[in-house]
Image (tube, rainbow over all chains, first blue to last red; front, side, top):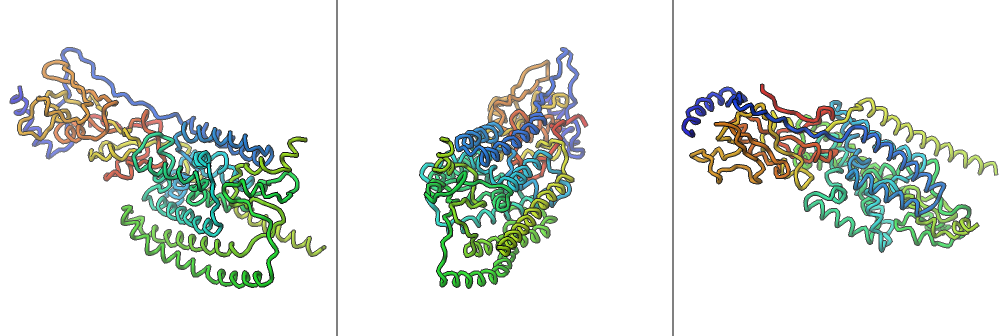
Length: 385
Length: 186
């Protein structure tokens, strides 16, 4: 039997070296009438479900905006947050999300052969549009990555404003790196190192679990570390939020300067009324401002230089295609300039401030989580009436 | 009083101007991307004619148990007794001894059909997508065993982790209406 097989097999094998892919052993004609089975091809999730997801996102964004600006109730916002965590996080397993969609948008902008799926585009744009009108309601109540960290806020500590601003540069750097890497087709950095997707899928390798556990452990003491110091989508949202048409107000009518809201905000996003600075300090600030403005182009140039020098190393690591390298280096310089300007912006922001008379949430930092409403005595009084 | 009023309006104008510019920016980005977008849904799939069965599929999937499984195009299969996808093709003597079995998971079931033919079926609950059988079948057999992403398991990551690790760029986006790239009798 074996020998018979081999005498047949050997010449065929030799032939196959010449003509690869040829049918070496012709499929048999069965005398017993054996039916050749069909391969099973289980279908992916129907496309209509993607549109349902988009609908849910739109509804959640509407609800988040209404709850933060009109209803003013922390419990409802927390409820919506948990719903979003369950739906976008555990049910949809974290994909597609607006944060990761940055990668798709960057790739679509740079590579004409890549067609961004309409649903991903909708996920990318909807929160941006809502933020322009209503502030960062997305972060507070819709984003599953934010929600899972929010649940772990147990003993939030205050982070020094200067340190906070410095650490936030990581987010700008992350956004710049992610955009460059996605645009050159290297990888979707944000999706690959998403710290919570392992938890959402409840499946994955050790690295993923360690990343999740460390971020959640940090969340206990530093509220929402990913949102504040790393989230690249947060960078876009915080800057759009500065201009939003409407915004979260802590008190329903007047501020009585009780400071309760400032104490309860775990993100340190509420600033006290601005003091009238003594003349000497004002002069000092003005001098600093001039220095920082002069420094801005220098920082931008330094950033560009850094991008220019670091990119070839990263490209080597990531295995960038030769054709994408010239585009990559240009993008890396632009990204470096962007990070440099962001750093200069932070320095300038540290010496200029808008005059405010009451306790107010800084628009860029406020996640519209609604914790301050519950502690505002004026709000309590209004509810009793 | 008048001066103060003017100051406010100037600030408002600036504010509205910047807001308008941002809104235009978001709308413009949206419009440009939308012009490049297609409403069609895409999913990941392995092109079996590019795949070299390197084994990355078993380890790089974000799922602990890879969504890539071996599938069998029965119509292409030679139903060999000495299947090089089922038995190790290397030994000096290729025979049907049990220690010669190739699959590390015992995921291939061999059933007798009629002399001298045997049918090989894949138990997907055991298969880890390592591609050892695919390598054997493609090198010495008809190539009827090949790897495919199974869409009942795939979570549809935005960026497929195996696609990045694939040395042949064999993992591509395909329209969701035709989510498999099957081999046929060429």
